[in-house]
Structure formats: structure tokens, C-alpha cells
Amino acid sequence: MMKRIYIIFLLSFSLFSCEKLDQAPRSTVGKDAIFVSENGLALYSNSFYNILPTASDIVRGDAMSDYIARKEVPDFIRPGAYGPRQSTGWNWDALRNINYFIQNNNKSSIPEETRNHYMGIARFFRAWFYFDKVKRFGDVPWINKPFDVNDTDLFNGRDPRKLVMDSVLQDLDFAIKHIRTTNDGTRSMITKPVAYAFKSRVCLFEGTFRKYHTSYNLSSTADEWLTQAANAANAVMEDYSYSLHTSGSGAQAYRQLFVSKSPVTNEVLLANVYDDNLALYHDANWYWTSATYGDRANFTRSFINTYLNLDGTPFTNNAQYETMEFSEEVKNRDLRLSQTIRTKGYTRINGGTVVASPPVFSYTYTGYQPIKWTLDDMFYDSGSRNDNILPVIRYGEVLLNYAEAKAELGTLNDLDWSQTIGALRRRAGIVNGTSTMPTAVDPYLQREYFPEINNPALLEVRRERGIELALEGFRFYDLVRWNKGKLLEKVWNGMYVPSLDTPLDLNEDGVLDVVFFKTMPGTPIPGVTYINVSENINGRPNPLVLSQGDRGEIIWLNTIPRTWNDRFYLYPIPEAERLINPALGQNPGW
Image (cartoon, rainbow, N blue to C red; front, side, top):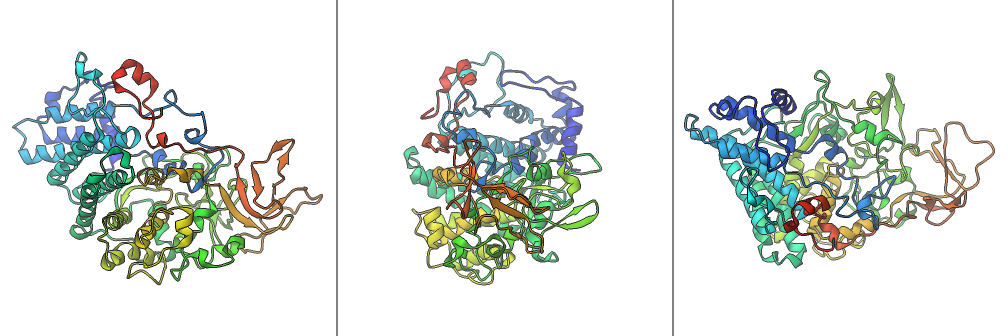
């Protein structure tokens, strides 16, 4: 059965309820009824799955990133808008639940192998829990027991990052060794390859964080973590039968991973599964299409420029790229571009009728309107109606983790390249440069994003990660671990507009879509959206203008500052928690 069904079943019996670390669990059944049988262990362990990312975590995961323009500047990077009083995430309920299980899973009446399997599940989730905490806060208390109400350890300070992450790695190694399940057809349960894949994610993060954040004095251990990342990813690649989804799906193979009603099992290792029959839904369409409900998130032109041409050359090698109109710039590009944003040929279904669907400027600010998570039928646009699955871990990420770890270690070779970056690009229709590593840096990618990186292969791995995992919730913490938070200050730029008062047909279907103006015409064209790009409207600065006044790139919300400070690499400890326990201290700069 699906994970969510198990959880609902568990909660309906109210086996345990605990809100704080200092509360004892309340049980309506009693632990003797839980820990004396495998069924009891299985039922309890399903309560851990609430630790996994929610639909909102995934669908909105990149809403604060360098490549997204949205209707408002996130408070986190808006000067003076975020601090300890606003900080969240210091919640330990799930850990209390896991540690209680670990402490009591010791009944000799259950075979040791069985107990260790479920212990492995528990320790996997403890690793997930702590990885999230360390990413957010850095040093955190390492807690490996369920505290009693009067336990004085409740008021200890935080433990060093090194101790906590070493403990996370131990938990993951235990999980990999003891989890028995190697395949789950629903792709909603934890298996041994899932544990390997997650280990590759954790170790890549920690290795690169230590490498690029030298002030922590942990750089000397970075390669150890990167080696662990490569080895864990390689285990998935070599020992299990996962592959990239390519066959029988034509040019839409990539997008099918995200709009399918069931997991694409050859590539997806773990997913949140939704089902219309069980009334389990999420709100991806509503979020990504509504002008009022969500963030109206769009890609920036700077990022769209990083998608390669189909011949494998950088798009920005074209001397005319800066003044190329939307309808032209999206042609003959990496096939993932047309599966990630609205381009020529994209259609939707409205009441059973197929309709051409160019970017809609009642939603988009930049012209680069995402479609990655949205179902094409407009029925799903209002409310939480989506029942497409949401991948949590997939093979494409594993390949990227392997390639990046090897590139950072300086051991990536042509075979590695072909099996990872090359394979991803071949699926995307790219025909050259997929078998051997690049030998020259792309000056645009280096200048705009990573001027400190001179290794051509590492640059291309980072390009590929941004494109392949776009909107899947990785980007902010990729910037964090690379020490590239300043990229969040990049201008939110959009498509090139050649002139004012000129109707544009964005998808070349013969229907005019949008006009940019400073003086509204007396007779507007029916069906065309008119966008005012005057510098001021009613005496106030217009948040949407053109870079050269009467032409140029769209510039959105440059009127509100976005400022990165290095203290943002860690969130502040919430003020309310420090009042309860002053020993927690505070992160630097907060």
C-alpha cells in the first residue's frame, strides 16, 4: 500500500502523541503490543514517513532561488525583514518518536535480522531529520534517546556540526547494512537503494559545504565526504536496475517523470504518491497557474540562457542572443526547456478542447512560465486537485551526485561523464559532447554564475544540475553548499522585447499574445494582454520595466532590494527557543 495510506491508518489508531522532547509518549495500545511483533514494528515505523518532504516542500521548494522571479521578494533576503523572531523549523517531535522506537525495539522474541531491518528504517529517518536540521541551523543538539520530563540534558547547548554529521553518517551506514527491502513497486517506501541514494545526497552536501566554507576548519575532511558520496551513488548505479526514463515517450520523457499519475519506476526511487480514488491530492496546478494563490514564480532569462543548443554548444555563443525574441530563442534547444516552460507547441485542455497555451502575462512576469509540475487539463487549476506523483529521490539526481563528487575530487573521467552527464544530455536530445568531458569553459556560465570555477567539467556538472533538477527543491541549498548565496541578488530579468506597441506572437500560432506599452492605445486588440512598462505609474515606480526604456529585457521588481549576507548560510535559532534554553546560543551574525 502507499505510504500515505499507512500513515493515515496509523494516526487513526492514535498509537502515539508527543509534541515536545520532554513529553512522554501517550499510548492507547501500550508498547508491549507494539514491540513484540513484526507487524507492530512495521506499523510504528510507518509513522516516520511524515519526515519526508511534503507536497508543498517539493512544489514550492525553489521559490527562493537565484533563477526564480516571483511576485514578492522573500523576507529572508529582504533587508530587515527576517530574524530570530521570524525563524522557524526548531521542531523535534519527529525525533522523539524515532528515538522512542530505537530504545524499545529490543525484544528477543523477534528475530535480530527483523529488528535490525526496522532499526535501519528508524535510523534512516533520524539521519534525514538531522540532515535537515544541520542544513538549516548548523550546530544542533545531538539527541539519541527519548528525554524524560525532568531530564537535565534538555537544557544542554548545541553539539558541533562534525559530531552531528558523523552520527548521521553512522545512521545511514547502519540503514544500508540492515534494511532488507531492495525493491518497492509503489516507490513510496524506504529501501536499501533509497538509503544509498540519500547517502549520496547527504555526503555531497557535506563534502562541498566543508570545501567551500573554509571558516569551519573542516576543509581537510571534505574529500572523505565526497568519496563517500561517489561510492554511495555508484552503488545505486552498479548494484540496482534503475535507469533514466527514455523509451516509449518521445520528446516528453523528462516531463513524464513529474506529471505521471504513477511513479515511473525505472527512474524514480522514492515518491509522494497521490490518488484520486483515495482523495489524496496536492496543489501544484493551482500554485503554478494562479495569478493570486501562489508566488507567480517564473524563471529568469539569465538561467534560461544556460540551456544548451541541441548540437551541444552554448546558446550564448550566438552573437545575437541578447536581442533574440522569445519565439526564436527557445528553438533547437535542450529538449528539457520545452518540458519545463511554455514554448511553441505547448497545449492545454479546456473543457475537453485542446487549446494553444503560450506564456500568460496575467501569471508570468518574465515570459518563462513553468509547466514542470502542472497537469495540462485546466480542471486541475483551481484548488488542490492534482494527483500526479511527486518524486522525492530519482536516478537522475544520483547520476548528478556521482558526477559532481568525482569532479570535485578531480577523478571524473570520460566514462563517468558519458554514464552521467552525457546520459542526461542524450535524453534531452543533445547530440554532441556526451561521450567525452569538455576541455574549455563556457564564458557565459563562468561569468554569470561561477567565476571562481576554472574546471570545464565541474562548470558543466553545475549547469546540468541546475537544469535537470530545476524546481525540485535543490537550488537554494546547492547555492548554500557552494558558498554562492550572492547569486540570490541577481537581477530578475525576462524575455527580450524589441519595441513598444508591437504585438508579439510568443508561440507562433498566428494569434497575437502580448503588447508592451507606455501609452495605452485607444483601440486595443481583442484577446491581447497589454503590459504597461512606464517607469512610473500613478507617481510610483513601476516594478516591471524594460532594460533600455523602450526595448530590452524585462526587468521585474528591481525596485525592492535583495541583499545577501553571509549569516544567511544558516538560519537563526528562533528567539522563543533561546528564551527557554539560553545555552543554545545563536548563529553568527544573528
